[in-house]
Length: 360
Image (cartoon, rainbow, N blue to C red; front, side):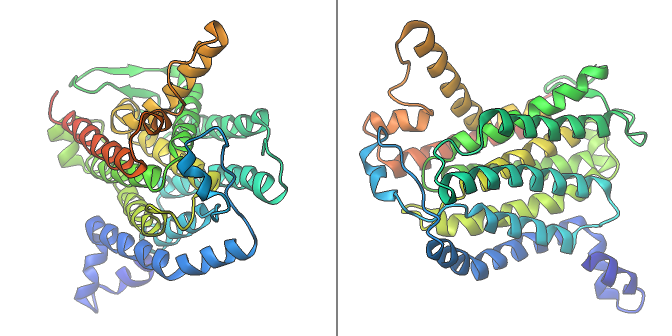
């Protein structure tokens, strides 16, 4: 919005020429998201507390978590505001990719909101029934897949880029549509499963968003894309501004969500953030790199899948408790130690993911 209002005036006011630079608008989006978080955060927390929107805690979990019962949840509403508003303020709004990431983020956020509302307001333990939750997620994923499959502006609309290989690009053809749905649903639920400790998920999202900012910028810059031999997607560079808003919102929410947490993001936050990371990977053809950068999210999801499969088939559990962050808590690690160590691993994986740009 500000881009369209102020940049046309750059001939009269040369200082406004900075609005043409994605890097400037990305930095501005980060600061705007932080400011929104700091200003609205206390109000949102007070409002959630007044509405008695409190977190429900598993009785079979670590004993240290019992004291968290009643902590305000659904703080993901703050995250969504801090992501969407700066994106709309600082992005070039004629860019279709910007609207697509905003739509997907809000779409998954609405699904999470419905789930949270049923759990904490209507007191339905199950929340939104699994078949409805996954059904709506798949519907959004398939809709995105169809729109990209028939995108006439993208010659690589059905391509899958393989890291570490210069020229290896797989054409998924019609299978690209369900593939997109799988990426979005998988990413969304992986972040959701990771959101179990104070600051864990939002910290990892901030790390992943930072790595994605680099990937998005490179993909949308023809010179860098050709030099690094990655698929060049015209217009994708504008998504760097969205990544900036995501970074700022993550840091801002972490201010209140760090241990001991004053507020939890709830499904409205985790499903939206996972969907956001997924659509960024899809639009920039970095779906496989997302598995590397989001390695902790993948490990969390796999730990649940293996735990359930093992218990159903053998009656035995692989981990003391799943997701895997609870396993380490049950093993004697302090919550803060689990969080920081997972962040360190997340940073390492993000660097490995970025290294694939050069190691080809």
